[in-house]
Length: 402
Image (cartoon, rainbow, N blue to C red; front, side):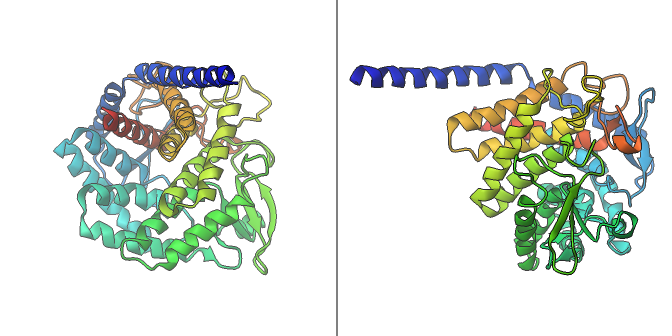
């Protein structure tokens, strides 16, 4: 019996040793500082080419060199200022800091019109939120409180979630609809609730996350894109897709929003059920990854392996799983999610996905909305945003271990 115990102990030590060795190898393949320098240079390249702070990068299609731009009412408008804040954080370059402020401040106009979608977190927390984190500007603080209060007007207490797309109530006959992307916007509510805003914002965010656990998330821990609810008694009607291949398919970026969102919800609440949900969502994503390590736009597209990839999904998941790894008490779990994230970043940091001289973006090969034939195999600004965010998260982890 003692001999058996010794053998088991030796075997466990071997597993841990091999895991640590694999972790080191995975990290050695990625020069985090070098790739961050690349990202800063690409941000500067775009920054130096932009003259209008109300005109913001959104996408670059194959064959194009420069960003196609949108105004400050587009749901992606916060990502470019967010990229600049991260580039400033990585470089401490005062010129980038000034530009980050210049492109952030005009987004106050977002609240000049009635709130008509859930995207205020993407639009204003990625911009003003990062700006406040890095500068502690009191004007940013006050504006974020206002933004959170505005987002809260879309909350339906009968359903227990924020209405994502008011326009879809008539257009698609979705009385109250909530999309998996909306998980990300809860961070604005959490932040406001602990920084001077109403405490009810915290309760709204928690209830939203809890409701989505039993509606947007399927029993196998894949995700619907859209959950449709009745507005009279709040019951869940059905799960459907809008940007995925089919109602019952697994849209890759949607799974990423879930991983990222539930990890963030655990950080903000300490609730174990949110952490367990994030883990199971991550496990599904890892299990379904293609051999080359970057997801197709939808895991169930029948045209695979000829379907387009989605670098933006890889970047979102990498950032989310890096944070997820930091909450793992078990060393094996910590290594599992960290290594999976590093592997995604390593793949994105190859010549296959880095744009380099191809165009102004950091990354190639993202897919925005394939069913609408929009942003297919394109460079997209939110792919760059989550890519540089993930690299900064990895750098902080690495630095803490030195």
